[in-house]
Image (cartoon, rainbow, N blue to C red; front, top):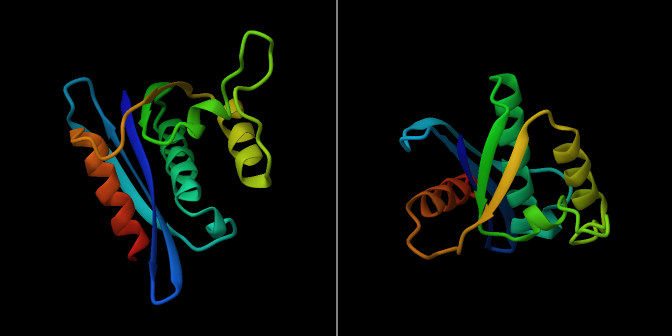
Length: 142
């Protein structure tokens, strides 16, 4: 299964809002499921990164609930991969320096879903990346 994820940060009239969105596709690029929402909890100060992380977490929860155990996550924020990927020396590619990123690492590592991460360039006319970008923006406007 393919999953595209994205986060969005929007500030209007001094009020910051963060959204997240994801879409799950089958091998023929048919939509199996999509979801989006707004972050109203802690870590809103991390802007779109919070949305990026929430999209992955929500997608993996859906996959676990629906017994989907092997996925490829397409993302435009490189940290999503680097916080959970180890180098040959056993150290992570990026340090998880706060509760948000550390919690993300623990969640992904403890998930029964096998994840392969693929970085895509944001805002580059990638159909599904643009699609989840719009979902995340919609989420931030809820």
